[in-house]
Structure formats: structure tokens, C-alpha cells
Length: 386
Image (tube, rainbow, N blue to C red; front, side, top):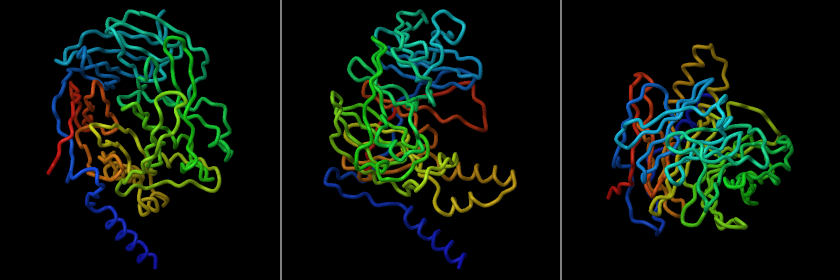
């Protein structure tokens, strides 16, 4: 009986995760869309660089080297030449203290740092131009400093995720009615305004419990709308980009083999859920279609295998196998959320998608086997396959 159940689960997974036909939504007659590399920037650098921002106007790549006790900022041009480097961490008069977001290139050949010491603006040589203290500071529960996970411009302010600093009882079922998911940051005043809560039809308002930060938003701003996907929930919610930031509509996403985590009847702490659950990592809208970076999550057979007792070497081999089996993927969907195409970007980091001046950029995936003395970022376009 156990073998029969295992066989049926495998058969179901193979059937449901096979190549899907594109649904005719009435919105498009495209057979398929894929990525096309339009341009690349190769920067000679030996280390573990993290790209923070790209500016096609000034042709600048802003990246950092994040070490355990130091952080260095680098600026390079589109020819790959380093312009300058400097550190603004810790014991310097114009330090940001600790970064709470990726650095963001701003106006007049300058960039802004959102840190413990406020909003600090530096020019491209590293000279401090202004500093605005935060009106209210709480140490964040988490930060993610990487390309594709930073603040988004919204008028003269910035939209950013709430970083779990609210004083809430996450073991209470009522927490999902009180939680603010986003903040509107004013770099000229230091004021933080919380906004956007779970819609009533969200899975997070279903009466179930969810693991901590499973709702971390992936978001973008485009077409006078704010697009938000709440972590494990495969839905894009559309909000007004102006006060009162009301919900406009929602778009369920047709993602192949997506393991939709539906919550539990009691509050649990299980760190493995971060790896085993499907989740939306990044969303962009490019010329109509949605481009979504996501993780599928483990199927039921792999969840069963995960729970079995293993020797340390077996556990290590299993984790490596799962990393190879479940790479972060890209789905391209029409405006109704119907799947157009789905693929593994292989040589590029799916979650690193960044749109600047209408151009889509992605970071090359580091080679785990060979250390290179350079890294690359790619300008990517959508290519129609008829």
C-alpha cells in the first residue's frame, strides 16, 4: 500500500508538472516568450560582489562587498571600469550605521542609503550631501541587501517592505488583521508611513496560521499602480499608487507545480518551511506581461523524504539534490495571470530582476565551482517565439 501511494504521488507530480499548453486568455496570441540577452556589462573584480543598483542615464553600476565586519561601496561604469570605492560603515563621521535596504541611485549623480542613522545621500565620490534622521527608529527583524530587493521610487518618496519591526504577537490569529506590509519612506523628513494590509480575500485572512515572514512582499511600481505579491500566496494585488492606496483588483497566478502553502491550525515555528514552500521572489511588469521570479516548493514526495532520519552526509546530499531540482524560476504571464511561458534562467539570478529607465537588468549567477575575477550584469528583453 505504501509503495502504491508513493507511485501514485509520483505519477500525479509528473502529470501536473509536465509541459503546459499556453491558455488562450483573449489577451494574447503568443505561443511563448523567453528572455533575450540584449547587452552585458563585465566588471573586473575578484570577490563576492552584490549589485545594488544600475542607472542607464549615468551608466553607473553600484555594488558592494559585504563582509562580516566591513562593507565597501564600489561604483563602475558600463565599460566595466571601476570609478571609485569607499566605506561608510561604522567608525566614520558620515556612516549610515547599518543598512536597512539596498543602496539606491538617485538624482544628480548621487545615491541614497537607508540606514540606522537615517537617510544619507552621497555623491558618486562618496562625499556626504545630506543626512536626515529617522523620526521613528526600530531595529528591523530582517534585511535583504541584494539586487531586486530594494526600495522603489513613488513620487518623491520610496516604497519599501515592512521589516518585521512592529510589536505584534505573531502567535495570535488576530495578527493578520493588524499587520502593515509596506512602508512609505520620506527621505526629506525621515517620516515612515505604514500602509497596505492583507485584503479580506487573502489566504492570510483565512483563519489559518502562517510561518513568520511567509508574507514578505515582492512588489513593483508601474503604470500608476503598486503591484504586490505576499510571499507564499501566488496572487498579485493591485493598489492605487496614491492616497488612500486602496486595493484595485487581484490577479491569481497560474504557476506550474507551485506548492501553495495554506497555513496550519496552530502556530508553529519551522525554519524548514522557508525552503520547502513555494514563494514569490520578485515581480515586474514589462510591456504588458508580468514577469515573476518564484520558487516552486517541494512536492509531497520530497517533503516525505525530508522528514525521514538521515545521516549528516545523507542530509547534505539531499539538500544539494533539492537545490538542483528546485531552482528559482521565471514565469511570464499575461495581464489576467494566465501562463505564457516558464523557464529556468540558468546563467542568471531570477530574483535579481531590476527595472531602470524601462530596461530589465539581471545579475549573472555566480559559478559555484570556479572563482572568477569578474562578474556580469545583463540587460534582458522579452523575445516572442511564434
